[in-house]
Image 1 (spheres, chains in turn blue, yellow):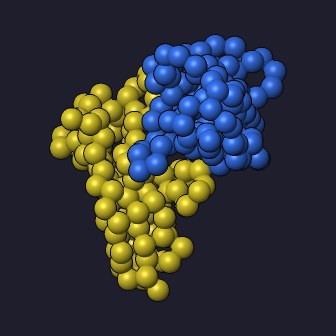
Image 2: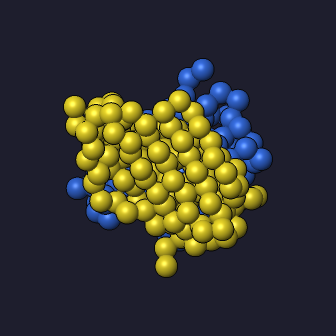
Length: 114
Length: 111
């Protein structure tokens, strides 16, 4: 059973460009979460999605950030007009259902903004 | 006050020693408690998962939750060099899947 998959593993963007991070949950998991890990900081929740629905986006910055989990395909975290402060490791996690809180993490995407 | 406090100070122990890690929290609604292990530049790996108060043991790992004190612990017995990693506590409330994490504790087991 493959684990959570994320790609790309490393992404370099210049200021003002767009970053797209992809996440495929574990087989059988329908819930996806995105977290951000800044240097010297713990993991911070960003958004929780189910297929075609955003359940909780309380951790998402108000501007430039968006997320989706379409009916088909991976979940996408999109960052428009990136700035240097967006440089971080972005982790995706998945779980089987709402009553099952164990979340399994992917290897992360390390975003560097030049 | 932060939701979850975890002293990030590095911890060095000799091989075979017991590693003791802990976190405190302020949100009394938290009911699910987890410990993750994260190797350098890797994703967090779920180690232990407990619900409400009590103890849970899995091999060399023991997790304890004391909800009255808002305090959780992880013990690693007979520590091995391969246990060298950062250990993150995480927790969530009933009906809320958002995990709140501590900053993580870097552990080094010296052969």
